[in-house]
Length: 221
Image (tube, rainbow, N blue to C red; front, side, top):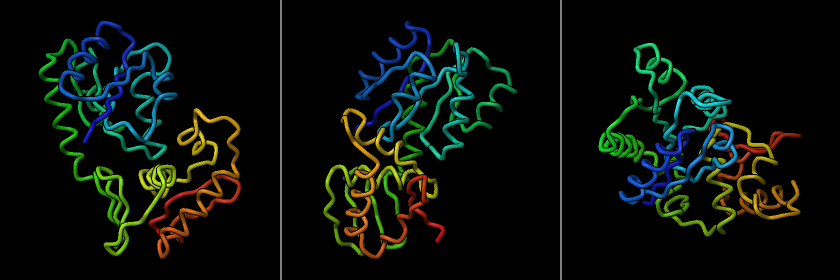
């Protein structure tokens, strides 16, 4: 599996050191200089975020907290010069998965990244009754039968599944799936959801519509 890591730090030297060394380990790397820029770049395609705490504008803690409130469970490792017990507790309380103090050893960062990703490996499949979504193989099966989805249908379903039980607004779906495509309307989203529902058959009812807002994969029915 190709892991894509988002590095968020306002110090160029640190970004470059992390990018070079993690890329050398085979990771795909995307960098952002602020939490605000990270928000623009963030998608379900990232496997992990290396997140600085003290930045101009939104802090790393606030960014992590906002992600968790939205239901986004992407693993987060904080990078910070603040290393008191209270700082660490704050990091974990807002949804951090690990905490590395600056200055750091690049070997330690690589080891921590691999450890967090290994813990997350169990989430490479979403299993709900006889519905299985394999994120490594990019396949969906129901009752052991593979469902033939287009790339867009798969990405739409993955977005809903990865944010299960959370309503995803139509404009958010457009930003995720058709960000580079002009003239996409909310009607396009509705058409794709209709096609997706037909293909997943008995599980169609779990893709629910919140009138006036958007869609969700509702496992609480």
